[in-house]
Picture 1 (tube, one colour):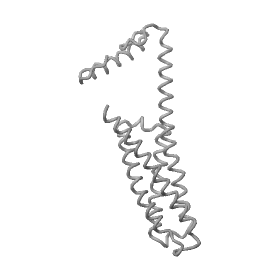
Picture 2 (spheres, one colour):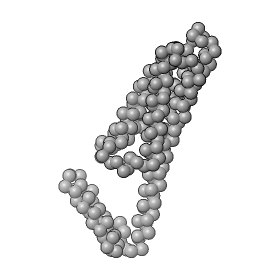
Picture 3 (cartoon, helix red, strand yellow):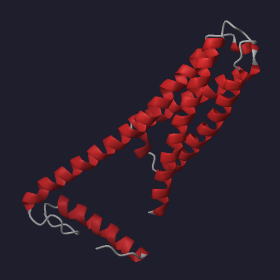
Picture 4 (cartoon, one colour):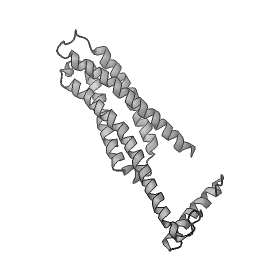
Length: 194
């Protein structure tokens, strides 16, 4: 029942509406003809469970990608915050980027874990994710380069190890956001092709 023109899309949507009405009226016949008898109502429940498991798996996948960036981002700004970073403007920039994107990542993690994005369908979430991850990648890359170029023993020998570790983790977080940007781009492209 796949019709490629726009009228076919309307017919398909009407058939799904008819399917729901048939099921609610106690009839076992659906518009797609997948379930022909009342004993196949159980297969509808199985399909519903499979959809729930798929959504949960995709939700956990997105959350795990954001959690890695969150934990590593936390390391970046705590390693710098434990030093006298305020004496050097370059570390202030790194702190701003690290804390800003850490807070936003926590915010988006909560949105994905609570599935709030399903309650607000007007927002193009794939585009939001792409813009967020893309901007995080670019600004974290700049911050990591600034962080690495500012780490010298000449500035402060006492804080050298913390700054060097924060520089390393800033590049790791940059690679996490680069991966998130890539997967967000794939998701966005697949949504726009539909």
